[in-house]
Image 1 (cartoon, rainbow, N blue to C red):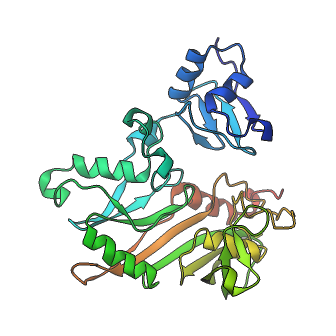
Image 2 (image 1 turned 30 degrees about the vertical axis):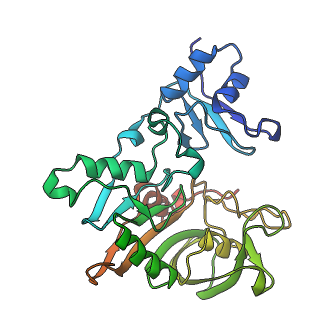
Length: 329
């Protein structure tokens, strides 16, 4: 069977946990299982805005699966990650959006052939370092040690440790909140410069992370927010982390009524209200623009800046031109 047009299919609660191949069978029951697997591995299927090449990937309610008439580029698999700093102890890289920082523990036992269908940043950086000439690889090939993460949709600077000593040293700096981390985020509407402080918990009552009413129930989280640029209907803000809790910036901004553009989780409040967005941006408009810390071995201060990726930059350019602005929801 030839695919004559793109077909989109929202995943219902009844299909929660089904494989991607199973969902394609629902969309096109006339296709054989072998044909479905081939279509997926040949880049004919997307989940949301992202290409997925893994037929066994489990889908979740609320996601949208799209069967494509023409295959998309599988550039991510061969994507070269920009390395900003590399020595025998650590590596600092520029993470593109649309890729997980590290592999979920449940995926560690996957065969290598399956891992290559959905590579993580960690996977790509390991292979890239291994491909460098000996004089550039800076030491023997080593597994990367995770000291920080960025959400899949978030772009920006990220550091991996390469030795146990570097892992311990960087870990202490993250624990002591001495690592300098500055983010850029686009939000709908406006917000005043402020410091947001709360106590974050894993479940605010609806299965999502959020802030607790009492300190003994959560972990302290502090985000310093300032206005970078006022745009028509939107604001580009800078967020400096004093602490580094999971989804901290996303939660804090959403709880102030200003969720990050492209937000899919925290745009819905605890009482079920859906906060407006209007940007049309297909992913989180969140970027880790600055990273600074003390080298855990040499003691040398290190600091980097990273420009916005093209899609985020292009969004800002459109918003700066009112006649080409993005319509509201």
